[in-house]
Image (cartoon, rainbow, N blue to C red; front, top):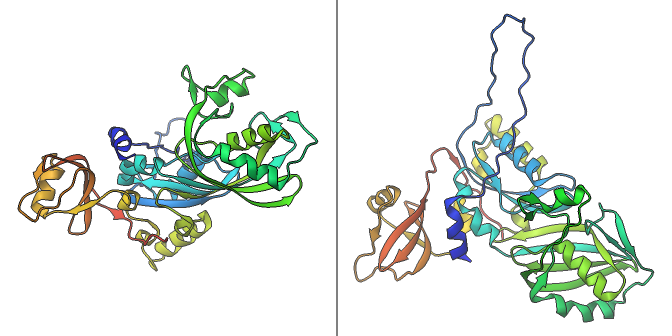
Length: 351
């Protein structure tokens, strides 16, 4: 996982959200144009937004970026508009650690509506297949082992996968038949948690990168011979970030208001950049060695008591993140360096 993440570090996933245009005062035809610019600042850290239903991931990034007046922001994995829950949003230098979060495991809770298959595989789409059959609890439980472990999964037609440079959902919306190939995905756990009505069943799934819960619901429905689609979906964990780290837009707005009044610092709302790196070892170095790494120079691990590391690490000095690096033949070779000047996170991560 970490090797793939490092390959992606050269171009971190940064989604620049469009800023709303500032209102302009009335002017005469001869008056010079006056430009109003929103003041932006260096902000570094993570916000794990509890995204509400109806908001796109791009809109969520834009909202957080405006609240913090941040120069850079991006998210670590799209969450559908009809889904709620954990959307990790990276600000500033945290965007350099996005690949590590995207490669992490995800935990979803979702509800399947039986009796209808839809072209989007969720409640928003057009009904394409119907059935009067309804599955029993025993039949559902018997079917689940076929959908755990390493499996082949065909993504939904309405997905962001590119086909000849076009997004699949754009082609599908234009009425074209989208033929997507099956892809390997990993599902570590899939549990039936409740059957509130004969028409609906609730599940919990822990899965890896690239898994579509909508496809899971579709394929389970087909195997049971009753068809199905996702009617409710909530993501409760992404990589190192769980439910206790989530915060709503309303809570963030209240914190921003208190920060503007001088009651708190916005740093208290941000998780530190390095919380995304929980799965890799950390190494503390001297400030002199940190300065070398910041200049892109390798640092030798010296002395009998030097730690024995191989592979990916993150480096700190004086308690502050300095670099992502590879240890190779006793040398620390920097891959990405961090400049945390400005506002940076200091909130504690919940379990």
